[in-house]
Image 1 (cartoon, rainbow over the protein chains, first blue to last red):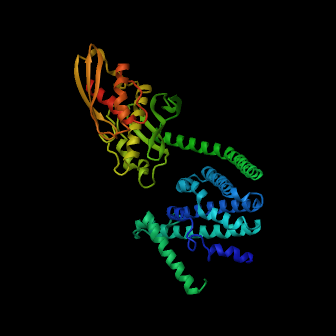
Image 2: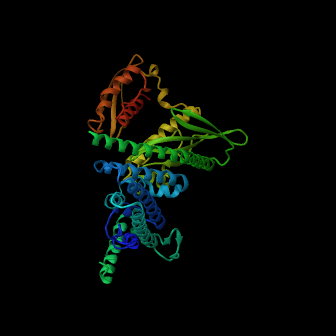
Image 3: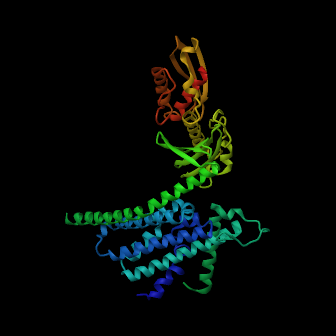
Length: 200
Length: 271
């Protein structure tokens, strides 16, 4: 049994869903266009992951295993819809920017993956720690990608211009190919660091 | 058996709880969302008509139209809260038309068009093509108003919808007659007439025989619209027009663009 600290940190580093497990790539590539989008998507997914992990861990002995997947999807979809409605009511701009990727959190493999691999076998406290670790790891990864793409693609961070007027933005980084390029470079960097530091 | 019952019951209970939870959250957020959308609309309305002090709402065919008046009580224009069909489903937009029949502005309030492709309809690149057009101008996708290449479905959906809305606005608010209704068959000399108009993706040519103030025969001479989809329009529309002795007929659903093309072609033949 790993300690609480290990449980938490595995989502950030060793098993970072984006950089190590390569889960949930579709929203990662699509919304990491700016730092605020990445952060918003990450926090939304974190919220859904936290709620679904809690509920699924709490009900883990009550849900018959044959219908566990539909039950998980129901629970996850409910929280996603709540996030969708709340974002639409309170932060319409962010809601507009994230668009279809909010409803698609339902089928984000990180969330169903954690429910299936972790929450249904562990108690509520450990599931919360797991959700926080994984969710924050996902949020961090998306925000880092967003910062890189926004910085070089638009010359700003979180909407604030930092590169000055002489900077010529690299437009490609703000487009879909730029997402693949940035992700590829980040994956290479992370792999290199892990090898270097012998974390494996 | 007991297993199956337990599974069904579990899902039922979870579903019921989830549904209840959602309806509570929706109850809180839905009024806020509606409120904000209404405010955005009013802001847009003031943007279109800075002089507006009063407006009246009227519903026509399920769409709301806001007649705007200035401080002196003079009618200055109308804003329609209307819908078009695009590539990704319904596009909701506001169309502002001045009292002279000019398109003053467009605001897309919600759409499901592809980001980076179809969402050009929200940008000046597309909107500038229609802003400034008058009720009297021919507005026809791909003929009078260019569609945006790469986003043909989105832009032609918008253009066709704008033509429709302009007709509604012209008829109901500006006291203008929509030409189609104005064809008077009794005044047309006997003979055979041909006319052409744009269908879905090709020009539709029709041959109309008028005798004794009546359309006695209507034939689609040529068209190149999608086989299988346009067929029903090609088969059905002539009889509808002959039966009604008018161009005010319903289009064939599923082939509305071809149907409208046939109607327009008959109009062009007889005008």
